[in-house]
Length: 287
Ligand SMILES: [Zn+2]
Image (cartoon, rainbow, N blue to C red; front, top):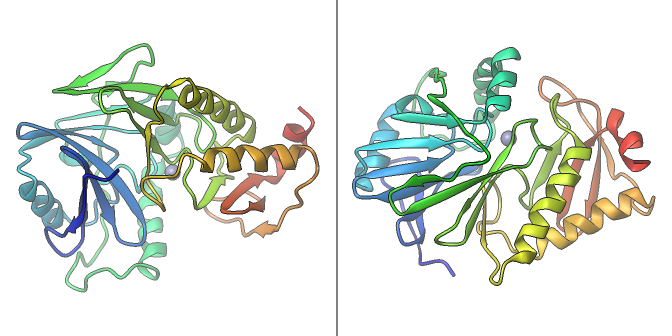
């Protein structure tokens, strides 16, 4: 399935894998991945990672022969927008940008960096002080449109749940579905201020129907955990939601709430783990 599973490391940080011809997964160890879809010496990025170090970014693009790029953002969490500041164009969904600006989410970046510093094996010579580099969308994504970048054709799909303005992108020509943080086989955070379990369930139904309508399963590319994601994961996620609603699934515990998270309950079914806001749980279960 994977064209060239060999991982390349252009500097001290990023790990690159060519998933399909000219479609690269860029992994930031222990944390997040984003995607580079290349054409000529240009590229469109689906999200842009943490953006920790300017020099590492330079090495990344140089190693792939990329002179300029645009970013299509699935959502605007700080581990998805890090290299937006270097992009020629930044495409984001208006609703997500409105929330990001209103809640001053750019301030989350330095807090987040501090939290990660204890977890991640960051190279010692890396930046000394984490820095958030500002960006602004140059274009707002329209759901009715396709976005063409060379041979790549991206269709945005609105999938609120994790955040209020989350998108997925279907790449039509290579049958790839870029999921952002919609789902992946790690803990799903549906416990943020703008998260909604009701919307998440609707979005899941929409995507599951889309996948089932296709002759061939699309390749599922999330931003965390297993890449690509096994399509059978969706069934297990649907089962968990159903079990919670039917009262068959008890929460495994609480989740400490703090800067980012609201009080929530964690539910676990096989490899599916989901955090649901306590204040939304009852209403959703009886809906
Ligand atoms: Zn996110």
